[in-house]
Image (cartoon, rainbow, N blue to C red):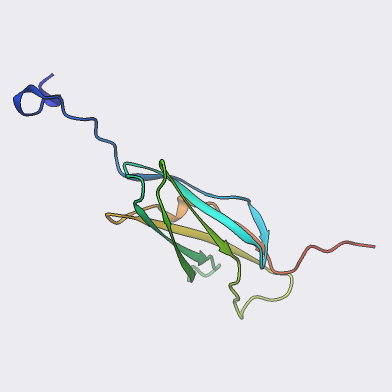
Length: 131
């Protein structure tokens, strides 16, 4: 097959697309002050490749607030980071819920799309129990 032949008849190594396959949180809902883990699965990156996780609070008006940047490293196609939820929005009232997502940027400017990241719901108030 000519398309796969390199110089002198050597076979060209398989090329793997560099992309973010999946984004995840370690849970779907958390309480303010808890530590959560976030991460991605990616292909085409060597172990040790750096990842910048940019966290955002989703606003109803579309003006999402930048919350924090955390770094991580790719290890066997996976990169993770931990974050203690400490963001405070002055416009949020008692009983409200934050909605967080992140964008992961890898070496070479490869990023996930916002729609790839699930939302982490964060309750501002600790869970209560009725009497």
